[in-house]
Image 1 (cartoon, rainbow, N blue to C red):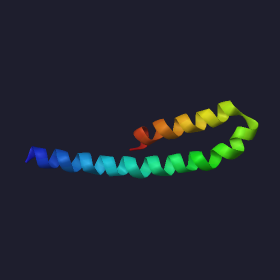
Image 2: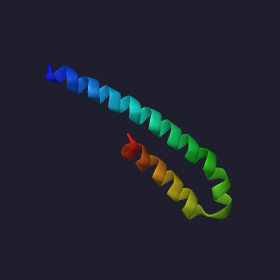
Image 3: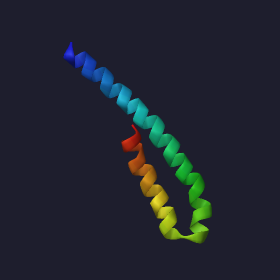
Image 4: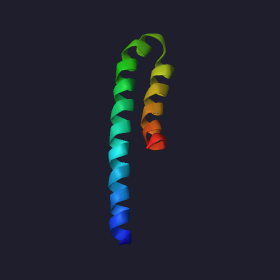
Length: 58
């Protein structure tokens, strides 16, 4: 019984992570082109936040 519950929670977390990472990386991709004109450091920060943010929000 514990295994089924754990597997269900793991699948739910993976689907949540997939959704959040897709949204955050898509937003970072959209923001990266305008940001690259102003600051490479800002563009890099947006990508890093998108990658790490998906873990924290899931």
